[in-house]
Amino acid sequence: MKLTLHIWRQKSPDDKGGFKTYHVDNLNRDMSFLEMLDVLNQQLIEKGEEPVAFENDCREGICGMCGMMINGLAHGGMKGSTTCQLPLRYFKDGAELTIEPWRSKAFPVLKDLIVDRSAFDRIIQAGGYISVNTGNAPDANSTLISRDTAELAMDYAECIGCGACVAACPNGAAMLFMSAKIAHFSLLPQGQVEADRRVKSMVQQMQQEAFGACTNYAECEVACPKEISISAIARMNHDYLKAFWPGKVVGGGKHVA
Image 1 (tube, rainbow, N blue to C red):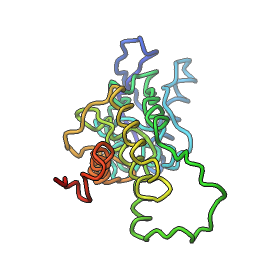
Image 2 (cartoon, helix red, strand yellow):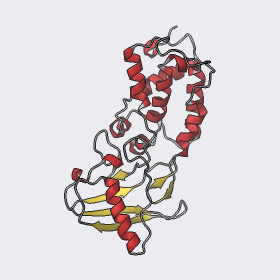
Image 3 (cartoon, helix red, strand yellow):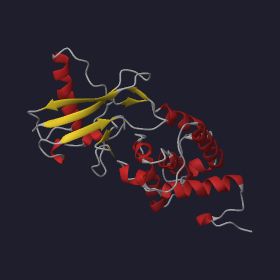
Image 4 (cartoon, rainbow, N blue to C red):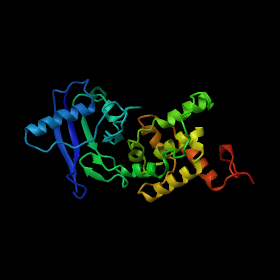
């Protein structure tokens, strides 16, 4: 299998950067996309050239580090998949691929395909945790949680913070990421104690970062490798209103006069 790659190369955050074309052949169709980049980098090293810098760790679709745009689609566009899980057989032999980093003001490029996603870390530090002292670990069955609630919380907890939602959003919004983290806690009794403080502080931190506003394009949901629903955003908006007007907002977001 042969591919023509147009890859964004940028030496540093201050460098202008630009695309450079590479031709890679004798590829195995069962390789993952990152394994193909490994082959390319080995060839570049043997030629005495600088290898392409990209992030990766688990290569199992868990850590979210491998994010990049492939032909304008986050993670390559294969539904429910990260870049490291993307097989070369997804593309046609002889295909031309344009590979670039996440494009967002909030994610400045550090080098080649690597971006700085520390804005996500600062949002989590603002409230994505439970700090209330609950004492010793209770018996697993002492706090009753319905199956539907538990499974919904786990659906939101699947977010791996890869940043695909931000890169795919025309506004560069981080609402799906943040709302998934907030909803994960707000649905469970352990997280409800600090629910108001959490949503206020995390939204405030998001506003201080360079993220855009959500205008319901829903591109984030399509691009999410964990297929997290934008219902998380609606839930977060409800929780945010309730945090400022306790007793005035009820289920479904309806206001009480």
